[in-house]
Length: 327
Image 1 (cartoon, rainbow, N blue to C red):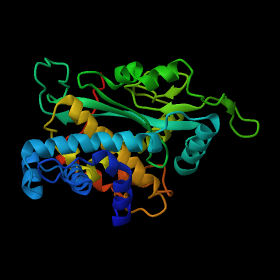
Image 2: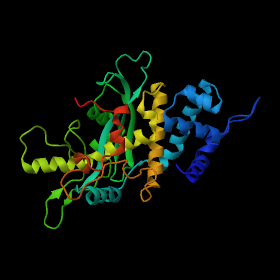
Image 3: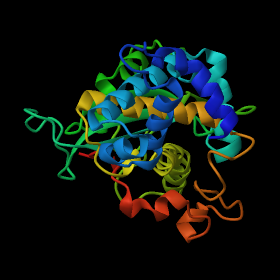
Image 4: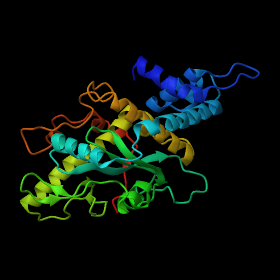
């Protein structure tokens, strides 16, 4: 984040962070924002934040939670899609076709566990198959690594297919309220194909959602389809990788209640989109080497061959964001 971007962000959220001076001077909005961004970007503990900014541990926690809520309230209407029209979906599909050679794709969907400390009196609701406690971040992104729709806070014990089915965006897709374009002819004289999301085996096959062919013994055509779908679907994996790389609060369990952890995830999602929308042509927030690249000379991703492996994958051993249960 540049100094100019920081000043712009402070101008947007600062009024919501201003506190009235009572007995002593209150902590300024600039300090509150700086503390929160430092915590989200570094993943340091609350105790470390309290020492660095000379505030109490409880005060540091309250500042972070209040600032994350302010970031979500201010940026969410600006950077997250409340509703897309048919033309917007077509533009997304054109980007996927141009960049990843997958036609009529309107987004890549996946879910990630965000590890948290064991909540009090939660039983096994947040306990996932990796033997840790988590909330689920379910997201749909476009071809430019921008998150278009998101659901945050589902219990970690649930599968991603179940989380999507019960989410507001999943119900909107199922009920036909997303303004998805009607099936269209693929090229001159080609077949009529629908516009669809792409997901992995954890998602059910739907008219609006494609998944890979299961099992072994696939035909060459089916294997090629699976490869093309996997290449398009990897965009959402890279989005989660960018989040964990640039916002290191994801790299270890978040010591907070599920509600406060949800606020932190919401804030990082909004900040990711806000920075990425300004960064598409400059590659400052997402520098070269951070994400997978495609080798046009082969039918494989460069990362499959050890070429152009994204740096977030190199650091995956230290990341505590995990893939959602596939059962």
